[in-house]
Image 1 (cartoon, rainbow, N blue to C red):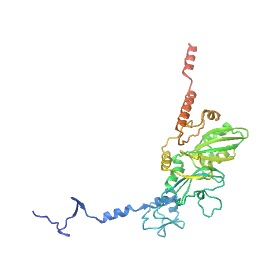
Image 2: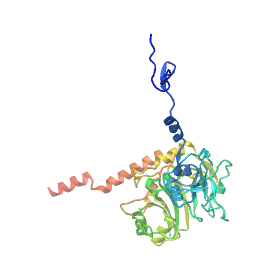
Image 3: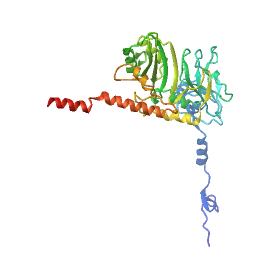
Image 4: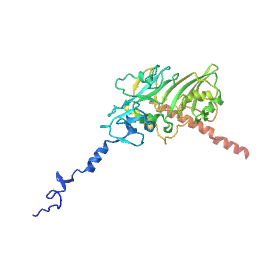
Length: 350
């Protein structure tokens, strides 16, 4: 048997390496380049993974020249880095090449606490209330002003924060609002339809009047936006000053059972539920959907558009279905005359 030799350079060697009966190509420079490219990540993703900001916010930091790679400013968007061999600094803080495990917390914020990471801040900060020693660098998802209280999410995941806070994903935020005096039906309808603010017209809100007396009114307001102090400014626009404001839920999560100033870590299922509740193509909730008893719905203001709690919470599926069925029944009643009335009217014409 005659063995065929490869000609030219490397004569006498097989161009393929035989391993376990299979002939595999030898390693090449392109294979090494491919392995090296696997270690590269986009700079904005690296910043988001370190909890600096969302990817969009990271792009703004990069464009403004506040990000240094190997002690040199980088302003080109789409830049890729190798975190294992390169250093990244943001505003004088060096980021870890291997970010810590991402953290997610739910906090019942008390009044008098501010949502900021500014180290020179003298007032109590929400990040200081999270006492987990392994929390790393975290920040609040959206904000509540100093006077407001209620549910706020804390995380080190910039992507997660953008999905929950940005209005295009439609994650619902529910608030309990108290205003002085007996709020009028006209004011409630204006809030539902949207009012004009400095940034433009609001998208409207679902409003459920829970109590209305001469001394004060309590309302449940659900919005999908997140303008600065939006709820307070909307009520001021219709002539009512907000006396107290409490955020009771974000998407499927609520502060039920959690005392003021206390926090807890979110489970994996809760994080996934929040992300599943967000999405640009998510259908808006039925304005009549809710888990409130019938007597509360009767107290809502008159008009064809009626408010409701809207948001979902764990363990409220049965209540939501009951609310939806009631709402659909009422909607059918308002939609047109009953069949019996048509028969009677036709018989009279005869």
